[in-house]
Length: 335
Picture 1 (cartoon, one colour):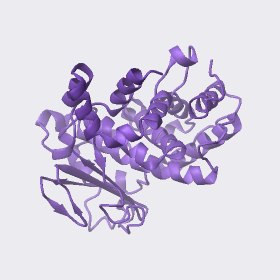
Picture 2 (cartoon, rainbow, N blue to C red):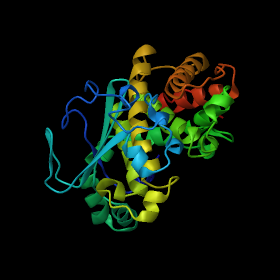
Picture 3 (tube, rainbow, N blue to C red):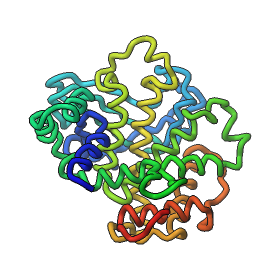
Picture 4 (spheres, rainbow, N blue to C red):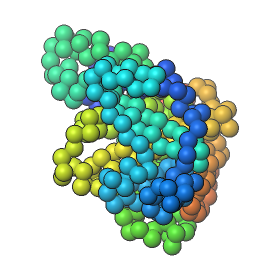
């Protein structure tokens, strides 16, 4: 791949904005924080709807009837310039989203940075515009090879891997098709829409794979960039009434995505250790089927629904295992 094409590719991956995701360097260890889970709270002390008493880990955006309902389950804090948070000093407008479930807490911190206009200027401008973007996006520059590989896995690349090339989204679709307890899963009709299980599965599955195959930091960078690109207001909380009331494309959907990204990263770390995944792992159909069945087991626990198992003989499994090897190892063709 030429240098120019690679530059454009990782610019596209960055989606026009550079975000600094705050991890352990700026906050207490987000994996070890003790917290009071909403499902364990006493209903007389907390005004939590019964719908949320059994939330464990991942969330469904379609279960929330308003932004206020979402804020009864997750904590959203906004910090302006020079605001001081506990153990942190944010130089730019920043949002910190916290979710506690089953006594386990995840935190996603997103700080404002380069905008879509900066990316557009870099793509269409002169060499100095590009150098400005590169200078202000050191993480994207340093990790451009990994970002390129994650991008290939995240998209259907028929021109490279042939017709029917699968992506993370197809794995999420397959998990939704495998749900076998429809009476439990779809009591809320919105859960069967694009913004229901499918959206949650897509975010968690992709973040788990990127974390297992690359790193939590890379997954965090990609996930936060995606959300920030579409809604810069997520950083400041300055939403219009129309945005707040838009349950499908407003802050409810986007903050749930940011939290689900964190749960996906946690899952990815667990599965990386369980299956001893590293940069030289050969992804057989058996390994991939086992990995996907573990993801479905997590969904079963989190959403309290059942699934049909994934088979290593499924065409999707065979094709995606080939794609993983082709992208990560350069050893197998997916066509």
